[in-house]
Each structure stands twice: as structure tokens, then as C-alpha cells.
Length: 421
Image: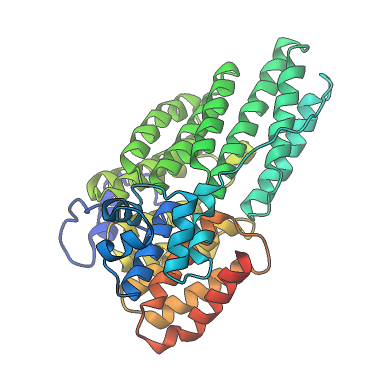
């Protein structure tokens, strides 16, 4: 929960303690490590290396068996190069992976295509129709159940054609909705694992937001969307640059809740780079902005995803990246205690991060419980490739866990992943 804004110094000291508590020393810049959570390529590389080592093969021994150089094979394991489909097939066959490597490679081999449906909208109904669709799809997206990407793009295209026949006031409102449609499309593409297509969608969203003079949307697209995608995909420096650019738009918009959201994205970037002091500064700023936000003021629908619970969750992610798993668990539990039920994806991700933090501390039974809770959070509902990748990532870690307490959970997780795949 946000701390009282009347004591800025106390807030700063409190957050610094949370970041540094545990080993009583400053956290220096962390060495960039390959994290299977980052991208589909990183998860593929981690699983490839695990199977190669399990088979007792060195890079030089495996490379000729799949008809590539050992240098290329090393780059594939480090997620520095994407394997071609024929290489994936050979790796899967030689390592007797039973199609698992091929499944992991699907997100970057078969990038999502978005065939545009033909939809016609009348000028007088374009605004209400597009708004209703976006509200419906955005609500479903929080639960990972949104499957209307092509429909959103088609209606945005139809609205763009209809908008030229309206007056200026209506045109600006519809242009804003078109920007929201492309932002939502980009987010859904990112969640599906198609980062390059998501980048294009966000670029289109920015153009539409500029045409609508929507400063808040420019901040939202640049921070919690583009910046977060960069951070998640292994480019935290690029994410920081985008977040700080978006922060200027957020401040100009006058929406403190939005400024808090964007500041939190900057904190996530600094945490991923191991920059504890800068991370703390941005978390303090985010808490201050959120505490000054008047809850009775109307906010855009897309901003409802960020509140005190979400800030606690992001703070937990920062602490985990900074090597403070104990404090991360405290923040992630705070998030879980007050989070709204609709935000299934966020709750699932943070439960998995809580499990990872507990694994790092050797709390195997607690970690197994967190993973079980994450599986229960999804239930029989839909799951996106990005979140499934997180389940696979923690599955790799559970496979190497010596404690029998995780055996049952590991088996259930394997069944869950197989069913989702």
C-alpha cells in the first residue's frame, strides 16, 4: 500500500531498507544472465542446453549431428540466434525430445499473422461500436481469454475509414479509440510471443495517439507497453529509455496514477540492470504519485490494471531482480492479498515469481505451494504463450530440485504444461 506522502524521507528510507535488507550491503550492478522467462528464444535455449547436458554431449559433439557449427549452436543456447525450422527438427530428433523443442520454438518460427477481416462501419456508429468492442476485449485480456485480435484490427481499420466523414470533435474521439485498438493489439501480440509485430502495432498506436492529441495514451503506449516489452524481452536499457520518455507525456497529461505506472516501469528496468539506487528512487516516486491520485477522479479503462496492489507486485519483481528474494516474497504476498480477482494474468505471474524467490531461498515446499496456486489461478481457463513460458521456466528449475516436497507439484506442472501446449 502507498506510504503517507507527508514523509518523503521516511518513504525513501523504507524502500531502501526493503531493497537492501538481507545482506546489509549495497546491491551492485547485476551481471546480465540468461533468464528463460525473458523470451521464447531464451526458454528454447535453456531447454536445449539442459537436454544436451543430460545427453552427455558437448557443443562440439552435438553440432555436427545437427549439421551446424558449434559456434552457432552456442549462440542458439544463449538466445543470440534463432534456429531455422530444419535445425529445430534435427535438434528435437537427435536429443530425443519428443517434439518438446519444436513446441518451444513455435512462437518465433511461426510468428503470428494477422489477416484483416473486412468490416464496414457507419460514421455515426463507429465510435460506440469500437468503444464497446475494446471494453469487452480488454476485460477478457486480463484473464488471458481474449481471442479477438483480428477483430480488433479489422474494426480499427474500418473506424479509420469512417472517421474522415465526421466532424472534428468526433474525429478526435474516434482517433483516440483507434490508438487504443492498436495499443491493445500490440499488447496481445506481445503476450502471444510476437515481439516484432507488437512493435509495429505500438508504432501505429503512437501515430494515432499523436493525431488525437492524447498525451495520456502516448505515455501508456510508451511506458507500460513498449518499455515493459523491452524489459521483459531482455533489453532493460532500451526499456529505461522508453520509460523515461513516456514519463514526460504522463506528467504533461496531469494523471498522477499514470505517472506512477510509468515510473514503476522505469524502476523495473533499473532493477533488471541491477541499479538498486535508481530503482528505489523510481519506486519512491511511483508511491508518491499514486498516493496523491484522487480515486474519485475518472480514469481511462486501460488504467484500472494499475493500483496499490499492482505497485506491490511490481515492487516484488524489482526486489527479485535485485537479488532480495525474502523481501520480494513479502511484497508479492501483499499484492496477492488485495488484488482484484479479474487480473488473472498478473496474479499468475506474480505467484510464479513468488515460487522462484522461494526456490532461491531453499524453501522448496513453499515454492511448490506457490506454483500450485499459480496453476489453480489459471484453472481450466485460457493461457497466453508468455505466461506458459513462465510455467515452463519454473518447471526447468523444479526439475533440478533435490527436495521430494516438489515431486507431486512437478508432476502436476508437467501435466498442466502438456495440456496447455
